[in-house]
Image (cartoon, rainbow over all chains, first blue to last red; front, side):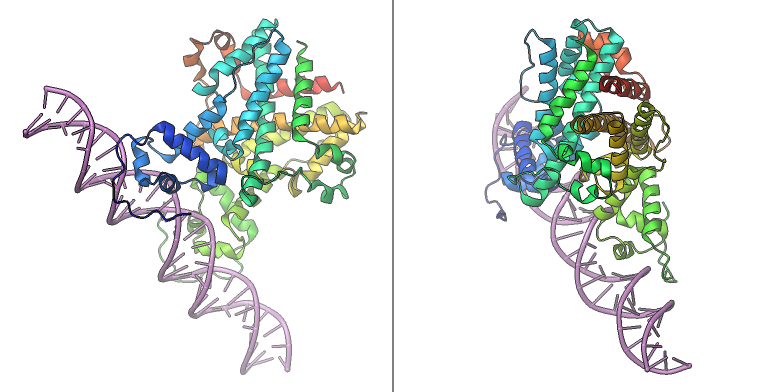
Length: 219
Length: 219
DNA sequence: GAGGTGGCGTCAACAGCGTTGACTACACTG
DNA sequence: CAGTGTAGTCAACGCTGTTGACGCCACCTC
């Protein structure tokens, strides 16, 4: 952590931009988690006065929301095969991957208003898949929300676990499966019986659960 | 907001306790959200020096975790009829209600490690219901997690919406359904078609989605 | 009852935070 | 070439969590 000498030359104009600031902010978040991000840290990393950021974002919160927007929007193109079942799977798998790419941002994503500019075309696309498969509007809306909430719950839970590991051991630590269960297993017989399955890989479990719901939709 | 005159008499011993501190902290959180809670605010409300809290909790985080523990544990007794289907419904409905009772704590609950002392007997009970219904261990574990993640996603999403409303208008504001959809509806036909259903009551949607998953489990 | 001891409430202080308002240099407009 | 607005700088405010030293008082022991 270099202690940024007082600058002799003022940073030239136009060096900063929302783009650059967001990119740098995302780097900081990926390295040290949201907790490690501050206006001063952002300034230090760009060798810039921290308050210069306020020319581009009104508050720190606004900047974080912009980051959350990036996460929700994702980077992968909408899936477009002719198998709606597979497309639905992929759509929600994309959302999960996106959330897991920057796990410590999960709480920020969580407190954003539902929907939001970033995710509307994805929402529209997913609902389209359901309706094209012949679902009535009411059922399509319900099915979409059920799938969405399942995916959110799964990814946010997985993200918090990953994030906690990052916070303790740095960004490259290997994330171990949940082990704490075993200590409780002695007292709880049902828990003990399925403990091995609970501690299994999150990704496999995600797809099995997703498959369960999709099957129930009968499309 | 009274500005707590300097005390003339020292607060007698034994006035403070984890119980009292947690109760008071929960009051503050319920009134002004997690954002409105600080050690100094807690001290002021009890007419106590803020640092006295550190005799009972090592850090603010530890205190917040204890609050989250209360939320996860819930207050309602485990459901025990002879209809496992109904018991499962009720179990997850209880979790949802518990999370919604203190919506601004949702992000704290989210960043706790999975499982945790508080929820193990509830977990055990739910898995027991599935196994007693004849499910193999692997399927029971999967079904439980699917139901759990759906409930979490649903409740956390609903909670964040409620929490945002509280932050803006105080604890007694009426929470309005999501209306922002309409502005996007023009550009997204599928979205427009189901907008009314999406904006519907969250509680109804929760139970329909839960029913969908439970039906898929065929128990 | 006297004397010691340890816990708990108090106080002052530190470093860090987000944010504000005034200041300044510079690129651009007329 | 003067004028204007904007983007980066700087000092400062009030807030935060947390620490370490200080002292009162309830309790335990003799």
